[in-house]
Length: 275
Image 1 (cartoon, rainbow, N blue to C red):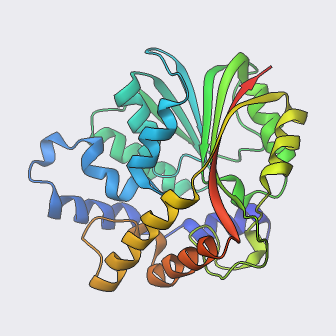
Image 2: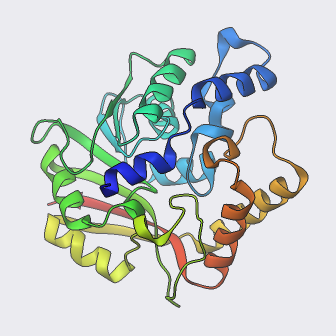
């Protein structure tokens, strides 16, 4: 089995569309007017959810009409947020076909099908033209990718000169050491590849990017996971990240709290420019 197969299997649930729509029906009073905000508890699958998305995308300098690539778009929450809040045209690509199908369904439910589209495929060989996009972003994706040099070269290929590239990923922490597994992106160390910030600096420079801003989001993450841990203890709400994480949701959340608190990993933002 390749890494791609293993990663796709980790995220695939088989009945995700049905489970999400049943949960949406339980919490949204008017299904004829579903908004991205209604879906935010489940479709922003990264540390901090929609609050992190707001903070992160505000740093990208997006303007109405820009074409934006979301690499590792999941079920499309960030793509829909950017399309709705920033008036951009967003294209997502994700390795998991089920995620792309659910993303397409949820964009239709929120009336955003005309400004978002989703492709299933590898971020290492994207089906896009050279210099196609005005901006790109990736949120909690590179942890599953060993060949980060290839990933960032491919992102650079499809961006226009001077385009912004925003990264919000979990990176290796200052204390190092082995992670406690499972974590949200991997059940075992076999498909978990964390880079240090220093390694990221070199990888991005080699791919032709200049880092313009960098922010450590460790404290923000600790507060977020403390909240999720309390949710897990009390029993999850109908609509939430437990639908994506599966039956071991509590264990994944507990391990992430421990890993971040121990300095073994932490989320970090890097805002880059293609030179």
